[in-house]
Image 1: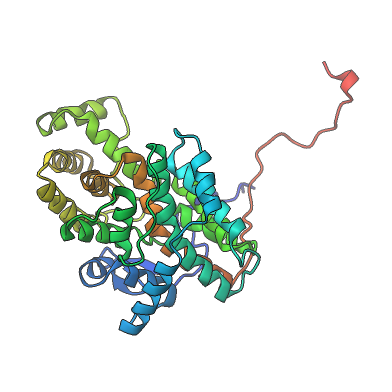
Image 2: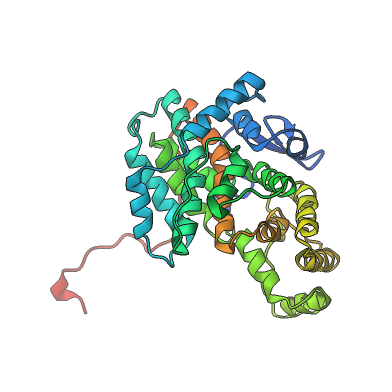
Length: 377
């Protein structure tokens, strides 16, 4: 008999808790938020309706949605102090580093910083939903030597984000594609960053601490940073005509191909068809099909040769690029969406909390005596 416990590296296959927020339905391979298939939400609801659903368990009626939107619009502005802090960040800093620090600063400024009651945490979640896009847009403009553009309370959520980044609102097809991406990125069960947020919450820490930690987790290229890596990869390929040869060279060198595979989905990420549809619409709107044509070749060869399907980051990367966003903004945009799922899990963890404290199996040296300094060789 071995004394070694059954170690689940990466917690693969381990059920850490229960959750009513989202589930991947194995019988349909469909991601659901509170029971609703995400592809149906994309076609029949908006991102702010989805945010309300994640936080409250049901889709809003018109009065509830109007109140939700009014609260979001009222909380968009950053304090003058935070804007000055953003201006002092290194211009070459990655936007995720800037956003992580900005959210931590928001926590220090928050009028309910020390209150972790459910009501206060919900109000903080709303403030973060409203302020994070403002911080992302302001940081992007400041890094280019431009003045931040103040949020416009007369614009809906997605239109306002484009206004703050570019100073103008694009055509409806672009807004719809962006809104769809926000719904698709909003939540995805116990992924790395969500579990990070729940872990921090389990110590009875506050909403801003949990979200700051989650941002740090999301930054990694194996998680949220993958959408940036996908676009960098696509830009390495000169044209769709050489995409297959480029990919086979990657196979020969056993190099990682970004945007493929998923720990949960084995027969294809259920979010991909919807995001691919809207990425192709973006290509039509912009009049540039290079990225989607290249992507189609990579997806075809990866499936035929490796039986590996693309994940959400694969079509989202080129979609954001076609919308005009700088590549380093892709993961911060992910944060603008995922704050909804993170907050839902923070609230759920706190409602039935137990400190998350797993065990580790020690494999270091056996117990030994400390040798005085003078006797050490």
